[in-house]
Length: 264
Ligand code: MF3
Ligand code: CO
Ligand code: CO
Image (cartoon, rainbow, N blue to C red):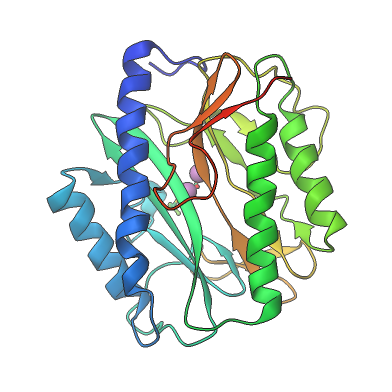
C-alpha cells in the first residue's frame, strides 16, 4: 500500500485522482481575473472538489494547512494561503496547486495563471518553468537514475538565467500525499535511485527569476523568494511505463501528449 512500485489496482485509482486534480485546474481558469480574492478561488475549488467530484481536498488540515488549495502569487514560491484580503490584480502571476484524494489515493498538480496582461519577464519565467518540466518528463524512462530529472531541469533553467529552488522537491505519491522517493529539481548524484516501471511521482520545479534563495514567512507556510523576485511552478503526477511515462494530471488543453514515449 505504501510501496514505491504501484499495483495495477492502485494505478487505476491514481488515474482517477490525477484526472480529478487536473479538472480542478481546467475549471478554475475562467475565474482568474482582476479583483477576485484568493479566498474566493479557494472556495470555488473546495466546493467543486467536495460537491461535484465527491473527493477530498488533501491540503485542508495537512500538517495544519488552513485552506483547501495553495495559491502562490508573484514572489510567493509555494504554499501561499488563500486569503480574503489577497485580491488579484492585472499583471499578477498565480500558481494554483491542487491535490485531491479519491478512493484514498492522491492526485497532485499545479500550474501558472496570468491575471490579464503580464510582463515579458513573467511570461518568459513561466514558459521556461513549464518547458523545464516537459523536458524532464521527456527523459523519464525505466533504468535511468532519478538525478537525470534534476539535471535536465537545472541545465535548462540555468541556461536561461533563472534559478532552481533547492528546498522543495517532487515526491512519490499514492495512498499518502508525500511518499518516497524524493525527486530533486537540480543535479545531485546522491539522488541515484533507478527509475522503475510502476513508480508514480510528481515533478514540480519551482523556478525563480532572481536568486534561488527562499524564506518562509511568519505564518509558517508562505514561502517567498528572498530577493522578492518572481517565482513560477508547474507540477504533474506521472506514472512510469515500460518506455516512458503517462501524465496522470494531463489537461485537455495541454500542448504535450499525455503519454510520452522515450526510446532511451
Ligand atoms: N501540493 C503541494 C505539493 O506539491 C503540497 C502542499 S502541502 C500544503 O507537494 F499543506 F501546503 F497544502
Ligand atoms: Co502540489
Ligand atoms: Co507535490
